[in-house]
Image (cartoon, rainbow, N blue to C red; front, side):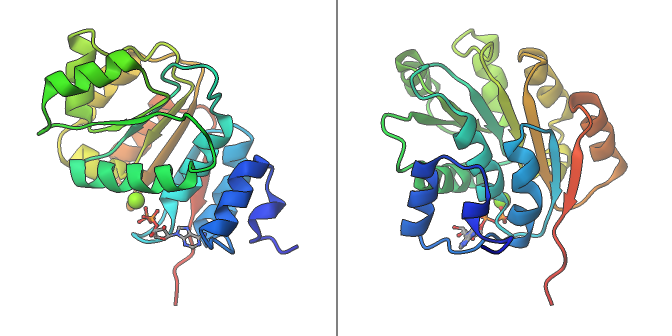
Length: 212
Ligand code: ADP
Ligand code: MG
């Protein structure tokens, strides 16, 4: 069994089986470097270029921790734009195919608020969305993050470039401090290091090696 084999990980058997059916035969470098720590529940900072497979790295981690029988919001993934949130949701739905009755909801701006409110009333396990709309729902009490145990900031550098820092801070304040936090970013300016220090505990830093 090689180190890049998914079966070297402590993954739920149903997730592992599904990876085979998706023909994910080997871990990408960022997955191989980050998944052992992610599956131990550690906070992780991951740096890797587009297309390096970051979604499955955090996606398998959050799915492995999720308790589908507890029908409440356990995971929040924040992305800079609706397009990126939709891509992440698509990939996580693919990875979650083997988990029956799992409910994944996207909450992004530009979509009707009322319909999202209705979906939230029906409940979900995982929320994937953009910071602005998530904060809107929190303000209007249509969303509660009190049971979130896993937080992901995807493309954190872009979210900060777009001016979401204060919004992200306000959202994190509404979440339990006992949680796993994962942050992914293509670049690591000072501002990212600062936010990572503020919201993570002893994060493990993982950088995907450049492909040649
Ligand atoms: P990133 O977020 O790093 O830009 P993505 O998570 O969007 O990259 O992944 C890029 C593509 O690679 C996706 O189409 C995904 O389905 C595919 N992929 C991810 N991990 C694997 C893997 N281990 N084996 C095969 N394909 C993979
Ligand atoms: Mg990505």
